[in-house]
Length: 349
Image (cartoon, rainbow, N blue to C red):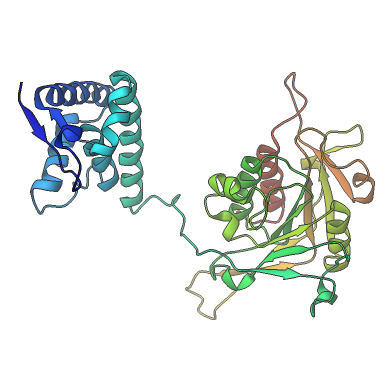
């Protein structure tokens, strides 16, 4: 059996880096066969992908746009891994590894096609990281905010908000929501619905505190777009709203004996006014005129909205439940009610 020496550092014995060529080729072919089989099952032309991977390193053609750079690199890395990765791959079951890489390639290729398609709009713009401001009791802008000596409030800077983001007089208050994944999902919904801001309280993960990294995984950048304030307690957030948003209706989303169906409430807030440019042939533009607003309170996954807070709010609403479980995930509830508010305001027109 012949051997092939690998690259090694000075002073290191070649015996530490010899690999049996026959064994290496056999292992490579096993990985390739298993991967191609799994790719074919997923509807991917494995031979075309292999050819694209070869041409990406052997020619100046670049990366085949049918698959994209990431998918091709994932294929190459699995079939011909670097020496530092060979040990991990060789210890893994070939079928398990092939299945994992095939699904990764499938996802990467689909993501590439989605990004390249001009008619697809779900891949939003990326905005840089927001600055944030710390406000304390002696803050020069204290007249606009309520703070207590023991509290520290963090806010995203509106300077970083994208200029073309449409907002409505709609605020979310997250009352000690525990899961960073839920909070991140709520941020995405809040951005999609044009929320003015999000107030987080207590243990709720927020973009500039505990759980920020986990939150960002489900928020996908929305946490850098929607302005945020954090309060030590929900009572502080309530006082902030009563002082700074006196015309807002404060609504708890909670299942109680006193709750009303969320569609039975008349939500005060935005109206859309037609603005004519003077050219009768041009389409009318619309501006949002705020006559109030809505702040929706969402509670902890287990205990819900604080029972001491609910009596202080204007309304308590619920989403009808028809199953055995008398609850719905908090991240799923938020957009249901937000879109009803926007519908009543005529946002869809």
